[in-house]
Amino acid sequence: MLTVLLASRNTGKLREFAELMPDVHLIPWPQEAPELPETGAFFQDNALQKAEGARAWWESHGTEPVDGVLADDSGLCVDALWGGPGVLSARFAPDLDSYRDKNRRLLAMVPEGADRHARFVCVLAFAPHKGESFTVSGAVEGRLAFELRGGGGFGYDPIFVPEGFGQTFGELPADVKHTLSHRARACAALRARLAAERP
Ligand code: ITT
Picture 1 (cartoon, protein in one colour):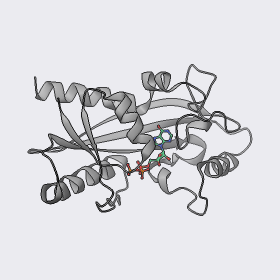
Picture 2 (picture 1 turned 90 degrees about the vertical axis):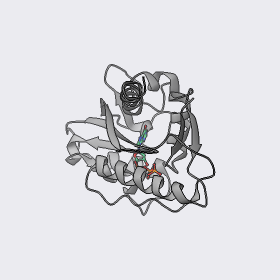
Picture 3 (picture 1 turned 120 degrees about the horizontal axis):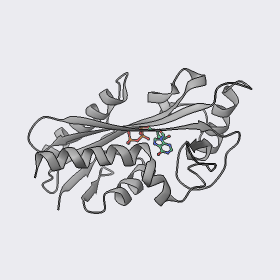
């Protein structure tokens, strides 16, 4: 079984990775570990920065050997907001504490009658114990709902309706989200890449 350090403090992501990769032994990023900087302009830069930063820290502080370190940089890209909040999704509306309020703010920023197309994007970076890091990605197209719907998922799930569905990710069961989400698609690409490298 592959043992992977998951360089994320986002509990929503942690839960999803555990569900999406039940055959991988995932070690959560320890509480006492430092905050991982993400200063890049693109999802890919930030994912690599987090994975490699975590690998460097684990080399001197790790409590068990790992096959590699996984980091996820993701976000919601809204066409009517020129792709925002995008790479800044975790830092959108820092004056608001709850995602309920952040989601309301985001919806209020979209002008009436505007194109409501949006997509979730996920870039995963994998830094192997030894060797070169690489990234894979996944996306899911959809549109913004007109109000928050559903209490499932996390973050922007209650305002995102994936293409082909009438319900938001907040309303759809997790196992449905996992058949089509940006993170599920990126995980499938990661699995394929790892299988090719470790037949
Ligand atoms: P880590 O860096 O510790 O992993 P983070 O929350 O800072 O956690 P990101 O910088 O990648 O992670 O920010 C991504 C944000 O995009 C996240 O905080 C959510 O608000 C949102 N997001 C990403 N995937 C999502 C999903 O599947 N459902 C809802 N919101 C999502």
